[in-house]
Image (cartoon, rainbow, N blue to C red; front, top):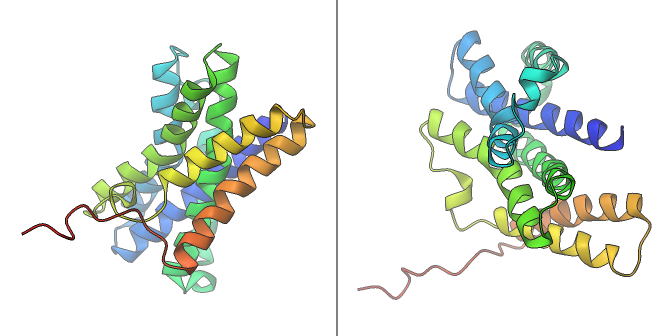
Length: 203
């Protein structure tokens, strides 16, 4: 139930981020719905296919589709309250990658994968929906920019497994892993921390 709740919260966060990008691009209602949908379930779909869990989760449980539709309606109705689109997009995207990283890690553990593979699976779960969203909206995916994005997911996953080794109470380790991802991304953006630019010295 704990991980299901996290999954639903991540779905809502990513659906809202998809709505914000789509509205910023002035797409019609159908376009907004599609972008929100692929943002919310894209990473989970890739995750389930990789571990052989088919049909993928949103085809098995209709709650995800209804959650996305409800979130899209909510975001459109209250779009006036989300007028600071860039700030809102960043916030919901950051919350989403934190939540989805732990969901992906837990799925990997349930599939019997090694910790490093679980971290990779969590990172893909958190990142791939945003990649599809940005491609559909003709943007360079944030994953491929210098911003700390996937790196935050990886560090959050590493922190999660380190906390489990202490040993640490499992629920606290879960919450801490999510917070590590969120805090690292927030700090990276606030203080302008980015990955090295390999083209800086190129001639």
